[in-house]
Amino acid sequence: MWLCSVRSWGQIKPSWWGQREPSGPPGPVSAPLKGQQFAATVDAATRGRVLIPVPFNPDTGWGTKPRHHIRGTVNGMGVRGVVEPAGDGFGFTLGPAWLGGCGVAVGDTVTVTIEPEGPQRDDLADDVAAALEAHPQAGAFFDSLAHVYRRAYLRWIDATKRRPDQRLQRIAEMIQLLEAGAQGTPAPLTITAMR
Image (cartoon, rainbow, N blue to C red; front, side, top):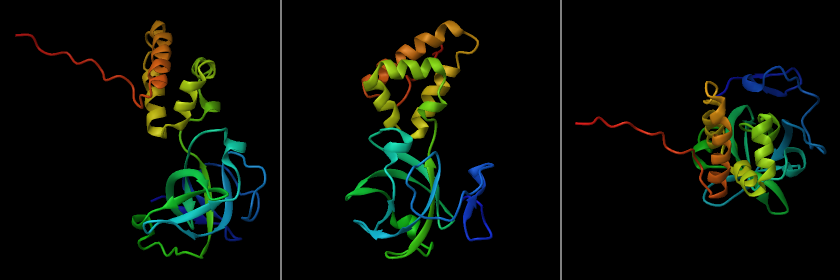
């Protein structure tokens, strides 16, 4: 669970939010940027879950993706989820395990703070970003991956710092793997003892 502090006018600022300061009271936003804070009314979802509606189109501010992996808080409690189309807008669901003991129920108005999770296209090295841009299918699949898989690809490429000649090879291999729909990097080679 993330630690949070409450601002004088009731706005919550999570500890992982860095040096960003709130720009105003919570409410609907019209032009989303990196992180957003808003108030939302909790709706019912299937199988004991609840839906947190998102009052903006994440494709507009965060780039077009099939899924938007996010992190943030709902009434000060840490959440991770996926913003997807929901009805005529967008939203993310919270399951029964998260709901247990948090005091959030259908019909409640909650304060929500969310931002994209993990490395985004703007955060990538120029050579990696150019390769993903040149191969739209691989780029779209990379964007749809959870942050864990995106970071694994980037760490695998960055592990070539002592051998820069391998970097281009790994970027090319990453593109091939992404186009084939592989979530992770190739398994490392293991050396077996010879008898």
